Amino acid sequence: MQRLFNKRIVLGVSGGIAAYKSAELVRRLRDAGAEVRVVMTQSAREFITPLTLQALSGHPVHGDLLNPAAEAAMGHIELARWADLILIAPTTAELMARLAQGRGDNLLTTLVLATDAPIAIAPAMNQAMWRDAATQANLQVLLERKVHVFGPAAGEQACGDIGPGRMLEPADIAARAAECFERGLLAGRHVLINAGPTREAIDPVRYISNHSSGKMGFALAEAAAEAGARVTLVAGPVNLPTPPRVERIDVISARDMLAACEMALPADVFIASAAVADYRPIEAADSKLKKDPQSEDGMQLSLVRNPDILATLAARSERPWCVGFAAETHDVLSYARDKLQRKNLDLIIANDVSQPGIGFNSDNNSVTLIDRSLHQQHLPQASKTKLARNIIELIAGQLPARPEGR
Ligand code: PMT
Image 1 (tube, protein in one colour):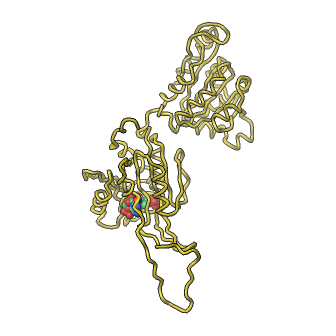
Image 2 (tube, helix red, strand yellow):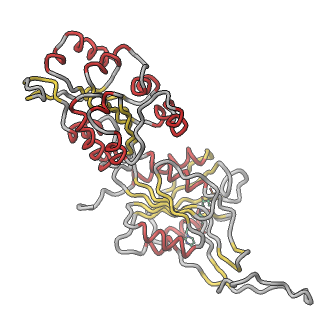
Image 3 (cartoon, helix red, strand yellow):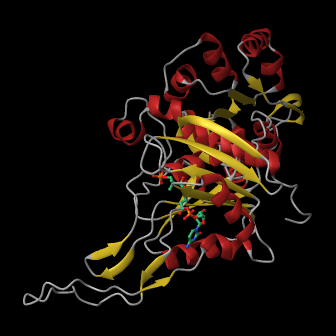
């Protein structure tokens, strides 16, 4: 079921007696970590109230194709694009016929036409209707179009008949839905990433900081989420949108960042891409520091060392697999090797920030990965998005198996 983690599922509900089971199906899908948006046909509302499914899914239920308010919130094309899977449970004989004909006369059938996501149906109908030649012909059409068909089960039916046509149980449908997805490289893992700069206050209007934009760390967070991980992103002050399916915690200073990272533990992997300020003023002034108008003397600022977030997490007994970055302007690889050993890391990513067009605040980067056995792998210049996917793939390949019980 880990495959459902972070997956976006549009659950279509059509009007059959099995519609009451959709409530449990929503719960099962959400328990497995999926995000669920429910679309109900008009007749489904006769069997279960939208309010029930809204409460369980945590989102308003979609119903009308031509409702301007609903379209303004999330239009049908947007919903079709949003979905990783469209799952219709129950699917009545009538809806199967409409789908087979490629009709687009209500929101659900329109979504099926408009989406690129896989489509799965869980048929539910009287056994004679299921056996009927027309339904079987519709089934063949849908199977040829690569629609996943879950069930139906055979047994006693609501109408008293016995035979095939019962909708599968919600737990079985959720398990079959999970099989529609490949297992991500980081499925079941918790990846903690920090990104961006920190700001160390001098007074209420001034601070010490650096040029980090957060782009590298945000790209890594997005790539880790794409690989199926649960991702916590602790972000310094940056101006970037949160990547989809990523939990973001905003912080300002190095000490805040350390506290937020420690709070987010346990994690399987910690990637420290943040450019943490090494020093902070001994004390931040409560009010704006004023110049002495009578004097041309400079100003003395006394600094103290900030905690080393990466070294602190790497020194814990139950430590995550720790990946550091080394931003250097010269002797890049030798400083990186030194940081790898000194901070007790599993991997360090050497980043030559003296090169134009890469490093701080640029959209591109080029790095060299060095592991514990000092094996090096250079990743040539590419967009941070592409590079992040590459780095996440390499990390997933090196990650030890999870200890039992976690
Ligand atoms: O944010 P972008 O604009 O996209 O730029 C990306 C980047 C250049 C910031 C990033 O790729 C990078 O190199 N990040 C590390 C920057 C840095 O501070 O390196 P460092 O060599 O000073 O630190 C070594 C490692 O220790 C880093 O993983 C750093 O996060 C960590 N550290 C450092 C100091 C400290 N007090 N606590 C730490 O955890």
